[in-house]
Amino acid sequence: MTQRSQLWLRWRHDLLAACVSITLILTFTLNLGILNAATPSFADRVIEHRLANGLTVLMVERHQTPVVSINITFAVGGINEQVGQTGIAHLYEHMAFKGTRIVGTTDYEKEKPILDELAVIGTELDLRERELAAKAGGATTDERAAVESLQKRFLALQAQAAQYVVGNEMALLYQRHGGVGLNASTGKDLTRYMISLPSNRLSLWAAIESDRMANPVLREFYKERGVVMEERRLRNDDSPNGLLFETFTSAAFRAHGYGIPTIGWGSDILSLTPAATEAFFKTYYGPNRATIALVGDINPQETIALIEQTFGKIPAASPPPALVTVEPEQRGERRVEVEFDAEPAIVIGYHKPTLGHPDDDVFDVIDAVLSDGLTSRLHQKLVREKRLAVSVGSDASHPGVRAPNLFVITATPLAPHTTAEVEAAIYEEVEKLKQEPVSAQELDKVLNNLNADLVRGLRSNSGLASQLALYQAVAGDWRYILTSRDNVAKVTAGDVQRVAAQYFTRSNRTVAVLVKKSLNKSVTAMSGNEVQP
Image (cartoon, rainbow, N blue to C red; front, side, top):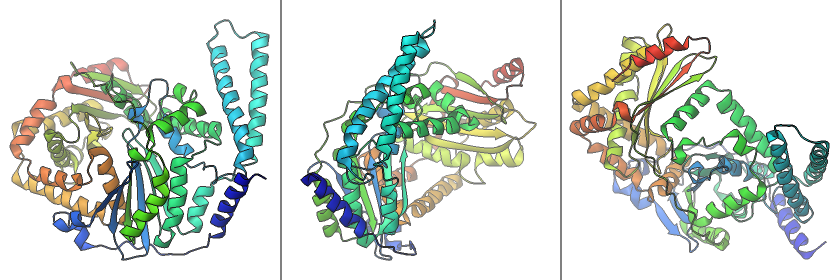
């Protein structure tokens, strides 16, 4: 055995030997000093530290329980993908749980050459299978034999690689040390990893996560690619709501990356390779693209020293390619239909500015006025009074916030009412925003609800860590948590009227309707044409 093998085995042995079962009741209590975001105490208690490699660390001490919640957020998501590689950010999130050169394997030195050959054979096999599928006249005997030979070698290599895999070892390590809430998510703007664990296991977290940031291994790549493909089928292809939103968003964005589903297109997913995924990781997941937020029972000075010792050794990545594509101005309403054996539904979206633009805060107020709670305008009119809809809601930033996005209104008709009836009723409420000033009582309600939401979002360690990392990543400053609240408080009834008149126009609108296959298309088209506002 080589010296290198002995070292990593010793490290792994020590790590596993330290695993002791800990049973804790995680009780996150209310800290009024921190939750009152309107006071200076909140900003004063957030401690910032920036490493030489660009990694941003945000910390808040809370000593009510011996627990710390941690959120690692990378400023990378579907928006950073290239044509032909859609879904690669989401696939990498899956692969990040497969381990490193130390975690997830019994012998990486023996495993590595198998994984290298598997990547070569798998890439060649993908290419050959696509070529055969595209052949109009069918494959020759030699071509089929070549593919069969590659398939046999591919399966043999997968079996060999599987002998070295320690399945789910990362999650088990956290679990054995009292960790809970281990999870991750990928969106258009961000990729996020989160965990809560006993504060005396912070050094274990630093060892695991710095290793994962520096040395991920894409083991079981093709197996996980298949898992992602199945996830796409369940959430998009075979889901009426998923397919409706995918079609709607793609219609609304013709040029910008926001129009591409985060999970990726099926043909792209099946063509992703280990080499392309590793290159994507090296380009976008450097420490200079990451924010780590830690909230709980921590000593900031000791935490900084620990992070410097572990994450500080990781070199910064080169600046990634700039995002240059801007969605052109929409010049006319776009309407799309999605046929599915499901109950009808409708999505309406208007293009709008993004985070940092003064009008963005006005849309937050409009969002709350229209659909926040049972007393909101859309719920009162469409659900309670007219009984046209089962549900109705809105979203002021679909599908992300790093670029101009959409204000979206969604609704599900209450049978026997149609989407056309619901759509017309929605436009009536939208027009009222333009013609009639929002009352002072409604504006006060919006601010009160915002304050309540802010308190609820920050009351737990994990919630506060999530918010700090989120706004540091998308706004460049976690203080946006405070400034956005203050900006919303300044919104007037006149602002609401101005913004509604400017953006809620027919030419700036995209509408997607979910229709049953058996529904007569001519009737559907006529119903859609009747809705003009």
